[in-house]
Length: 353
Image (cartoon, rainbow, N blue to C red; front, side):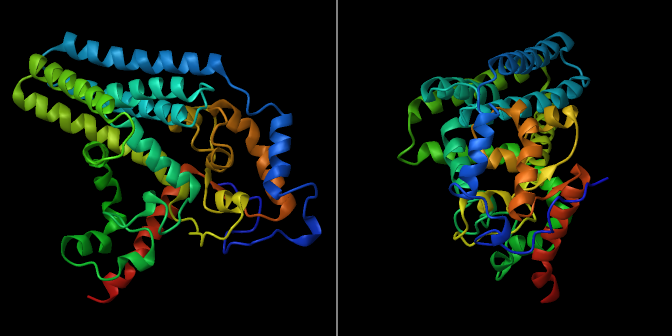
């Protein structure tokens, strides 16, 4: 069941909170930031991340070792599905490293991030970090957030106009095609990574390309040395489909279907009103890498994952205090809202046929 939001439903952005509850002593975010710092919620959690990295690394080693032990068998498709989950967890670790939640220094974060992203997963850490930084700076902004840009799926009504042919067909039926299209997300990440590496300007482009090449060579060799060609193709398809669906379902509940800002909102409202939290316990935290606490993550990107749960009631209470809507719902309901939004965006194309 979805929990009722602590504040009124999100309908529009407000430049200032109701004057009768306006905090004193600085901006709204500054007041909340001081409370969070006093609670020690921005302090590093080295033991947590050491355990998490060991678990994820063990999953990867266990998956590839099992593939080798099982050999040329169709049972390896189960291994492919397991590795899809393991790759997703590795990508979530890379996400935390990019936000410097694990290490204080950028150099150490980048080194570990390239191991998790380029070598373990096979996508460019530098490309993804630049893209994700732009998303955090302007979440759900039609022009500035790359996660809502007009590509395959359309999240803004204005972007749907004039789409014809295959793109028009996808937009008309994008709600029904959402989950099937997620099976291609893993391939899309790799294609975008290669495009970024071919374009000028990327930092450490040679290193990024070399590490991705190492991943690709090891991946192809493992499949061809162990499996028959048909089994290798099936393994590849299942592995990347599970990886794409899992990763997409991790990020989809966070902003999809939430308001799109104009860019004039203050930092706190820009982050809170465009984000949605997903309720659940420790298992939900582990499955979604803590991103179910999306509001807290967007307000404090460097906050370690285990501290997000502790910050949640503080942030929710503060939003209630200043009159800012705080959206929180169940995982299933979050997907329903996202799919409903996709269906509504595609309505003009369906109506004009």
